[in-house]
Length: 201
Image 1 (cartoon, rainbow, N blue to C red):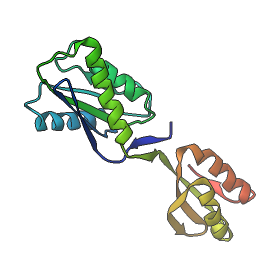
Image 2 (cartoon, rainbow, N blue to C red; image 1 turned 90 degrees about the horizontal axis):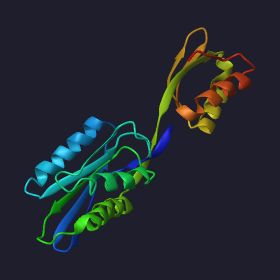
Image 3 (cartoon, one colour; image 1 turned 180 degrees about the horizontal axis):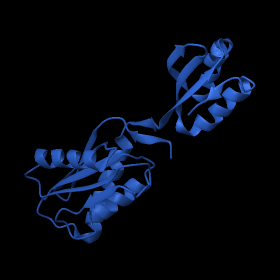
Image 4 (cartoon, rainbow, N blue to C red; image 1 turned 180 degrees about the vertical axis):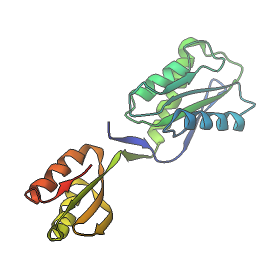
């Protein structure tokens, strides 16, 4: 997946359930290392909490290649797994979530814990501002000077832009383009110039 929604900024929501405080924090985490750094930061901030349970998906929405979760002392399967289920179905990628619990003296039971932890993630995702992450690739093309203006007009149609342009015997363009449009742009450059533009990479 070459473009997908990711958190635009950190977000936090809080809820009280049967006297327990649940504080849910979310942030962008493009790598497992970034996710673990965020989790460590939240754990340090709420070091006196009963639990700091987490789940993260480092990668496109729904991908399970780089994920992690923890019940952090809650009964097995009542926190990390339900949190992960919400994340995987959210349509948001590169995301880490920590649900901090301050125990209020009343046990919630297995079902109550699952609802509390998954509910915290749903609530923070509902409040989360998102932005689009786009995977770009760079390509190099060269051709006669006569194609400078036509190429400049063509690039925006493919969400592409020139990051460098050099002039020698021919013009050489270094072009940045969304990965999903790279093949169509290469074909369009060749088609536009009737083969006079050569796409190197």
